[in-house]
Image (tube, rainbow, N blue to C red):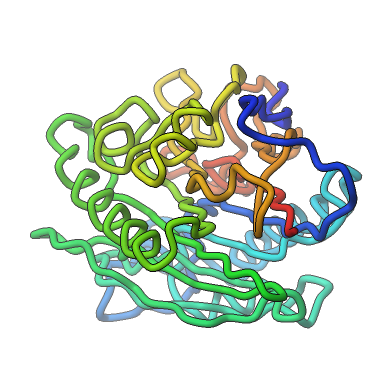
Amino acid sequence: MGCITALTLSSALHAASSSPQKIGILWWNVENLFDTQDDPAKRDEDFTPNGKLQWSEKKLYLKQMRIRDLLGALAADKQMGSLPDIIGFAEVENKTVFEQTLQGVKTGSYKSVYYNSRDPRGIDVALAYNSATLKLQHSKAYSVPLKHPTRPVVVASFMVGRHPLHLLLNHWPSRAFDAELSEPNRIAAATIARHIVDSLLTANPKADVVVMGDMNDEATNRSLANTLGSSMDGVQVKAAKGKLLYNCWSGYNGIGSYYYRSKWQKIDHMLLTHGMLDRTGFYVTKEAFRCIDYPALLKSSGKGTWSTYEKRVYKGGYADHLPLYLKVSVE
């Protein structure tokens, strides 16, 4: 399928000449990682044993095994070489089920950053990091001011040696069957993310920032192109000095991360500040970005993912999105 492909970076990026430390970053909308308990404060009744989806401990266990299987496959992949140092998930019900999922991974070093959202279904973004490699300095959840509550934008700042790295996790409002009518909601989320990035760049004009998530929009949509400042041109990003963010889908001509209405879409994103396009602190090289499309994640036809549910029918697969992976070098 070619989704694990080299990112064709512009001449603004440099190939590494030595063997610097590498930090692996994974983003994945894991599709409804729910426990089996009914939470009266959430609309999670479908994901209970007696609910419409008949969500059981057996199905949850298989779901968790699928996620661990993907993480193990990344570690065994010669191009990856190790488990991700940073893991960002979307559609997680609570901290307990998130940490329980990662407990089965063959490492004892993951710690979590988790904020409960006001999303009616109770789905959150969740972050785990390798505490042996990264030292958490700060984290915060920024709510998006909408009439109907949605997920916050979560920021986490780390130190690797003497270098700071900032991560923004996003799961913007869905298209809700009408992309145009729901667009202002995603623009509102993009505005919050942009304010956070601007604040980080005000404190340090060359701050190394990764903005990642399920934006439910493609790079040409207004939320990304206009509000967040997404650009496919590394030279322009460097010249703009903070006004633009480099979109890691640049140069990628294959399938996307999500299959909808008979079309692959690129609605999950990883974007970088201009400080990551140089050779100081954190930076990316050629082949830094990958969209993971291992055969096990896909339908046999290649037209879509092997998801947990499809049209509310249980399929027992991994998720309805493909993961994104970024290998970041450290000076």
